[in-house]
Image (cartoon, rainbow, N blue to C red):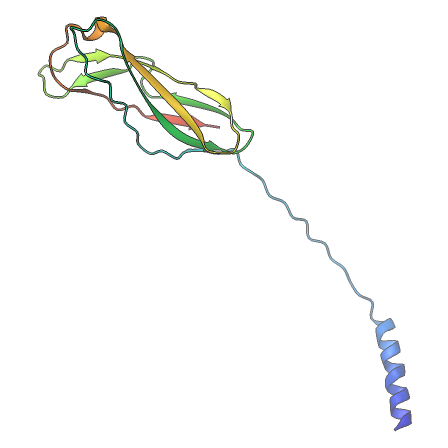
Length: 145
């Protein structure tokens, strides 16, 4: 029995030195993409009543929430071509009232949720002779990193 224990101990000693441990490496990487999204899908910008007896421009505003990857330079644009126009909903032929949009179109993202404030105004000269009706427009905003 004593011989078996000595033999087992000797085998264990040789076994551990006969087999060396191997190593391997794994390289890990990730790329953060410069993406941007609007978190507000739809918003409403409703001007107060346009009253031709009250001389002066009429203003309104709304906001859109968005988020871009931290450090991304972004650009926001709209599809009005710089000349937004509201169109009457029931008049034939349709009547129009131009208006202006104002917002900060560029910036560098913080990585957190941010708010784009969209200001709009209608000049008195553009609605003082307008026909009575409801006038509407839909503006599509795009954000690009």
